Image 1 (cartoon, rainbow, N blue to C red):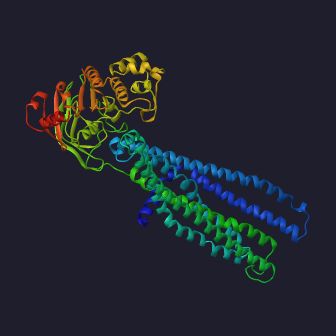
Image 2: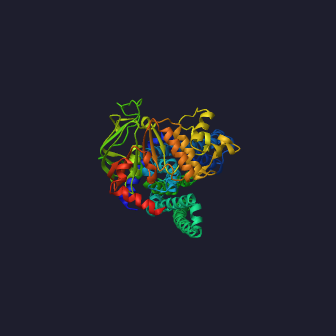
Image 3: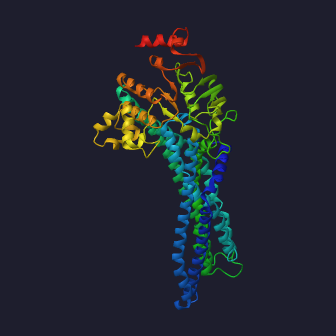
Length: 597
């Protein structure tokens, strides 16, 4: 990974730590108290052993030290437990904050942005990558401070007793962080590659799972199985690379710590044998000093070893942070305006819909979130109670127009709703005025009742059945043993696409909205169901405005006005009879449709 990018990601990670609250500081405090307790425990044990062995004092002379020691042991355990709990709470708060920020950002950018990545990739970001931030805040950041303070405190205690022992500790200590940094340069890059492989595998698998029936119909199951196997193998190799680095770094850190303690033990051993006579300030090396320093030596290196171990958590977090930072810092191009304001914005305007909704678009340009022009400039008018159809070949900009009207894409120019600019309305208020039905019905995990009554949770069963009857799906629901409690599983499991479309239609009809936005509402239906649904829509939209995107030109005779689009522009417009008698794209599309029948 490039050094500037790694520094940028590390800086971004550290800025997020405020989400941990005071628990991060509490973790450091408990860690420091644990360090003081260890020093006190080593002092008490060394005092007792020196007195009993060297000074031949009775055990009763150390009653007070024994009492302190008995109190310290459970106190250390309580401090260690408190440290673990506070560190977990710090990581948990950070994860909750980050996950909420990610979901809020995805919600802000909307479906038009989300469709740029497979569903599995988003699941990987929201679940896996956020989860992998935990140890960075719960362990690595607190350990950085403890690795600085605890060894320093031990050095302050050891140097007045024996400067040679202190010098050995001071000289050997840097070996551990130096090697940790050396190993860590490759760990962050390995983790970044691992997350990319996981995201690719998740998206690949989710897309194939959703299209399993299609793959079987086209005899692609075996070939796609090999593709998933290849993606899995790539992920396995990158995971093993990360683990190899982690285990290697842990083993080498243990080796250096063991060597350092061994050097210290050799020094004291030869000092006790009178082979070495330096470092004791001329007072001699006592059993107390030797025991005390040797017991502190592992604790001197332990924070450094723990930091080396948790350095893997930093590398893991840096790998996870790349996509998270890119998403959370993603800004809509400043040259375009958001379609609607949030509820927190001031001076929001409201519109009177008693007489319906009218739209006036003037030099209307739809942009992507990155500022790329998708549609326009176009100008059109939708009068109150008028029904307009939008037609055109694939890529003409029809879906972009609907996404802009739904508030999912930014725009330039003007789009007024009953005389008020769209971006001056609260987005939640605006969407309550819309009834949406798309070509890909979206039902949610729950029951038929839950899905139909989504806009009005207190809707009566009779009202729900009336809506289902209008959508030509009540007979199917009543044939089921559960009736309105028929469960709808993930990905609309248990019902066909056509049935899902009609349930979604019933939900749209239940909103009593003054403006219907329809995107190929009969794309998944057979001829009989199609006519029934169109009749239900005509009845529901009798007093409402409507803008419908469709490829079916034979459905347009009932529409008041038609917009013909091509390459993001309106190339023709008028009623069905007018366009039917004009040469142009509409006539050509009619000819192509008749030839394909």
